[in-house]
Image 1 (spheres, rainbow, N blue to C red):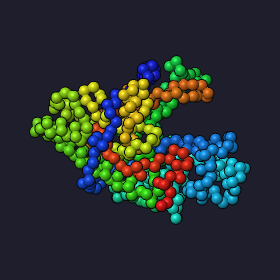
Image 2 (image 1 turned 90 degrees about the horizontal axis):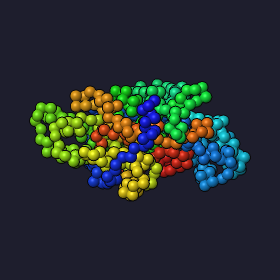
Image 3 (image 1 turned 180 degrees about the horizontal axis):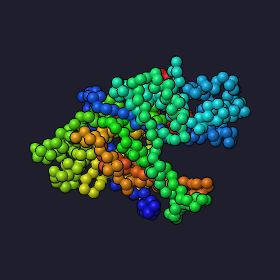
Image 4 (image 1 turned 90 degrees about the vertical axis):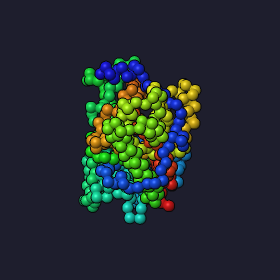
Length: 449
């Protein structure tokens, strides 16, 4: 318990950003290959939780029956939603208030029950012969760039959705014997203590302490349990209609191809260092040019080995269009600088220089990663050894109307991968199609051409 209290009292620790990532910090390689398919690949999809927040504007309409711009757009383009096919038989008049309320009630509760389903099971895309969910789209994507003989996907899901998830994937697995779908839950041992506003443990009516899920950074435990050479990571809601999917497929292949070349060079340098047959100047140039690690002192053999013998992630980055979320930055660690993905809450907004760097960011993190998790001996890294525990998050929440503070572990692609080697690659903006609200499904990437 003390370790939690100490973190609340210290507060969120700021990262020391030097600059936002620009084109000079990005890796580009037009000589791509599919050699990565000789490795065991898997796609990891965080998919926990219900889709309630996706429909918050519809819930508000149920409660207030007040038309907003959001609601007007929703009904103006109602027929363009994939799930419309499941409610059109109800024969409501979408121009009438009473029918509008009944229609939304049918979507959220009565007929479709979307307010209680996980986002993974919401029907998002319409085709001539089928309506697809994010699960279907992640499978389709994986079929295009993972190992053909065994397409592996791993979803993290909530325990309360396990039966729904299994019922959905069972017929898919029967139709596709080459498909392997695994799933796991966020581990209870990663739950964190909640405190009141004075940093005292929050006590429940039965006298026990309140513990809460420790955020998506807890999933580094799930990631660490996966046996594979290469792990692709993408959020459950970042899917695209297949009419627009080609850029996504090509960018995934590009990230994996770039990563394999860099990984092989890292391993070659480690073996050369172990044999004392190395050129330290050449290795330092590789660290600076390829991994963007800039050490402030003279590089030694021990330093070079420490930098090279780490997991590698290749991260797709898109041009910054003002979406909320984290971004890529050059971060100062004292003895060296490297590339990190940082959330806004990790940056000291009271520091004018840091605020200027944040506001001038050219790129945005869409959560598009390809991870190489084996060492030069082809043994699995213990990913927990590379977490920076000081990059935790503190947020204010409420519990039964009472204000509390919540603690989240370092984010999965933030502090949980702090001590990884990072390579950033620009990918097309069309590969980023998150569904945060139901009206996001009206965007081009979710509609037929």
